[in-house]
Image 1 (cartoon, rainbow, N blue to C red):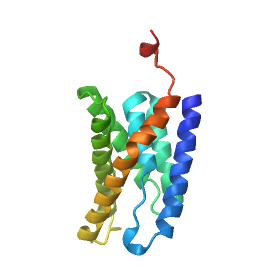
Image 2: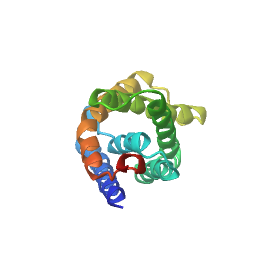
Image 3: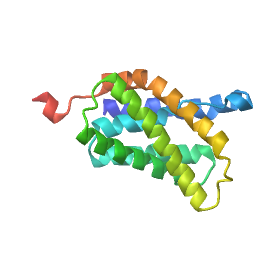
Length: 166
């Protein structure tokens, strides 16, 4: 229960940061750390249950609710990121800080291309790829930069799993 409360507080802070910081910056610097993506990667690394998938969906749905875009895009992308992180951590040893930072960086790209791909498929993307790729790179680097402190905060509140308790 304590872990769920900390995840909710961090997600709430992330939504607040993303919705206020982007609008306060000049038009050229509209980068905001995707805290919800970092929380989703944490869930994919540590919560291998239906609750983890539901948490990833909820994070995306909350992001959809406050973004004003098409409903379901971020929810789809977050669940996709969760599944890919889960499958990655089953095959690769993702236990040190560097591998988690790289995983968040790559997850940010996956999320961006999932949203762009679905948007392009339904004609909602105007095709300004050069500017979009620069924005995605900046957001991915910023998400990777904030990943270590967010992971430390979430890991500090994490209760031991059944396998760790024994």
